[in-house]
Length: 312
Image (cartoon, rainbow, N blue to C red; front, side, top):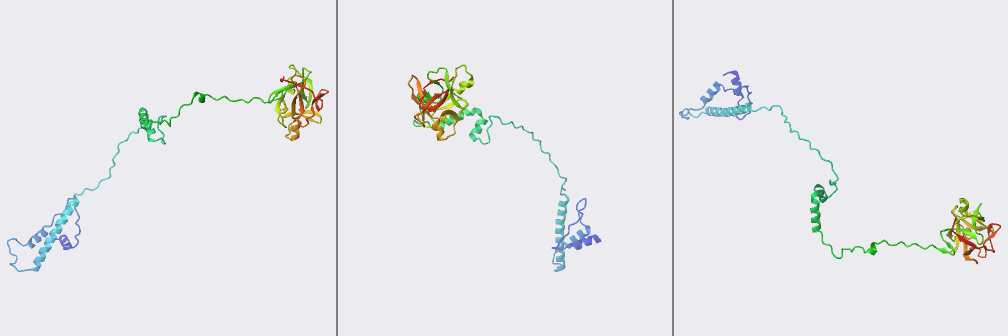
C-alpha cells in the first residue's frame, strides 16, 4: 500500500467526519486495487461456515469497519459525481423588453366633461348621442306635476307693465315749483327783474338782449325755504344763491343755512288788483312787500304788482 493510500485509510473513521476528496477535472478518482482486495478478503465467503474458526471479535469488527467504509465511499462517490455534473452559473443575461408605442392624447374640447362633473354629466359628454335617451328616461322617472305644483301663467294684465304715476307739479299761486320764470312789473312791458352786482333791479331786457342779461333775469321757483305755501327765487346762473331782503333792499346772496336767511329769502304770493298779477310779501315781515324805488327793488309797505312771464 502506498503512502497516499495509507493516509486516506487512516482518515476514515466510523461515525466520524469524512473530509471530501478533491475532484479531478475528469471526474471521481477510481478506488485503489489494494483497498478493494483487503475489503473482499474481510468479507466471509458464502460457502464457508462462520463458526468453523470460532468466534472472533476482531473479525467481526473488521467486517463492520469494511461495511461502513463501503457505505462512506458510496456516499462520497455519489456526492462527487453530482458535484461534477452541477451546472456552473454563467454571466447574467439581459432581456430586451419590447418598445411600447406612444399614443397621443387628444386635447380636451368643449364637449369634454370636467373633473368635477358627475357620472351622468361625464357619460353625456362622452356620448352626445345618448343625451336624448337619457333626458327621456329622466323625464319618465320624474313624478308627474300635480295640480297644486303647476302655477298658471301670468294674465295679460299682470304681464303688462304698470304705468308710472307722475306727480303733478306743485303750484303756489301763479308759480310752478321747479320751473324758471321772469318777473315783469305790471304796466312795464319789456322790463324784467334782474340781479346786477348782486343787487336786484329793473332793466329793459327782451329776446334780443345779451345772453348774460337774459340769464340774470331768469329765476328758478323753489318751495319756500322758511315755510309752506310760499316760494323762494334761485338764480339760474348762480345756483345756491337766492333773492333775499337785507337792510331794506333786495340782494342776491348765497344761502348760508341759517334761519334768518331762510326767512329773508321766502316770499308769499298774493293776488294783485290787476288780471294775472301777483304781490309778493315777506314771510318774516308779513306787512311788507316787494316794492320799486328808483329802478331798484326793496321791501316796504307800498307793493308793486308783477306779471309772471316765461324766461327769455
